[in-house]
Amino acid sequence: MISFTRTFPSLVVLAFILLGSDIHCMDDIAEVTAKDLTSHAALKLTGSSDLIDSSLEPSNALGFSSLKDTLAYNFTVFKQYDVNPCNALWQSWPITTCAFSPDGSIILLGLQSREIALCEVSTGKKLHILKGHSSFINSVAFSPDGRTVLTGSHDTTARLWDVETGKQLWVIDRHRSTDVSSVAFSPDSKRILIGSEDGKSHLWDIKTEELLREFTIEERRGPVLCVAYSPKGTTVATGGFYFVDQQNPTPGYVVMDYAVRLWNTETGELVQELIGHRDNVTSVAYSPNGKRILTGSFDKTVRLWNTKTGEQLHVFTEHFTVIRSVAFSPDG
Image 1 (spheres, helix red, strand yellow):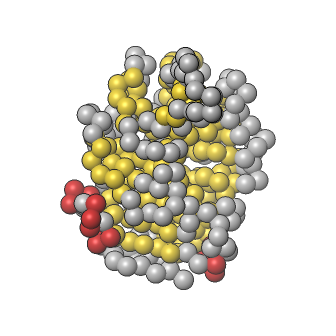
Image 2 (cartoon, rainbow, N blue to C red):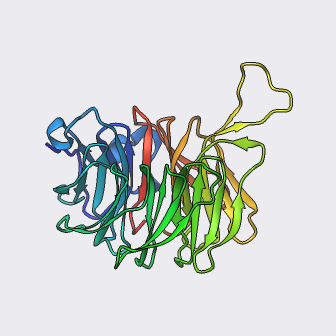
């Protein structure tokens, strides 16, 4: 039920998942050019009705464990894949989002039932079921120290949980009655970044529960669909889609903004804009060394950027439908 075109042991650098049932992993990104992308496809897993219950259901997220396993899921089933030799390891209940623990031993699953499951990766055993959200889960994240997890929901709250006990530690409910669409931890596990549908991203101190920064542009309105923290913790990235407020708008004409923005975490200053996508930006990820950013969009492209200069390094255009999630492997 799984077909693959080429395999390279431990050479997978980044992967893209789209609104369909395929995962594409690319190797040796420095040598990839627009005209020879197909020859650099390191791995392609193709779903079927037997594999994912319904081939029409959209795959929606992707992640790498520290052991370089990949995972894919859609709204019907979660399935984990081993990159080499491409074995399907186990599958779970209907879910909406997922994340690996730093050591790759635990998977965090946001369930359609409004609960969150912590499961053992090797066996699929449920360690904890986290209950508290009153609507579906939009985003989940593991803290880098592996001790806590953060969840964001359509119920307008983000919640912090203890991994060992499953206890709810903090409910962040100050988002002006708007969905929490994306969440992330700082590299030192002391801060959390929360993106919401009102176009704002907020940086919080976990210990003091203090709001440290608000990242927003006043003349932009629209949801923050994705957030990411740089490996050194000096910048954060936010993406989504925004309506541009105009002083003298033309009737029936709407100006849209699909830029990914990088912000200084200490000053709140906007330090870079990554301009190129032509539709909603759904996912953003920093490379392990922080020098590059990968973005995915409804415009059916994945783009690689230089974080310092904002230069667009590569545009991957071989997909035929929207991109839902992107990720780098732990070794970059």
